[in-house]
Image (cartoon, rainbow, N blue to C red):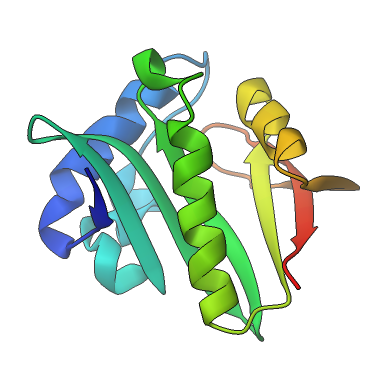
Length: 151
């Protein structure tokens, strides 16, 4: 079931992201130092959705608005659910929320290690802009920038 997140979903969202990070050597999830917004996901983002199966959170996607531009954030999916259209469903839900908010475009930043996500973004019409950024975080993350016109 895809539904809007509540702040009470915090533990499930954190557990999901920790499971995904475990797939990637060097990825560290430190909620207290780097991801405090996950402690109250619904309150920390303009929109936050979770995908739930049998009472367990198995997918997430969020949106933040910055000067009228939507940013796709926190897109994570349980490894066993990939390739079944659930990631696309999460992203399309955020895109619909962005359109409803009047955003003309949506952007995403994605860790260079998340190759599957990059392929999904490409299939969904996101273009890699060539911009990168270093987060100087515990994971030593470098991210690629993607954008998509919504209107």
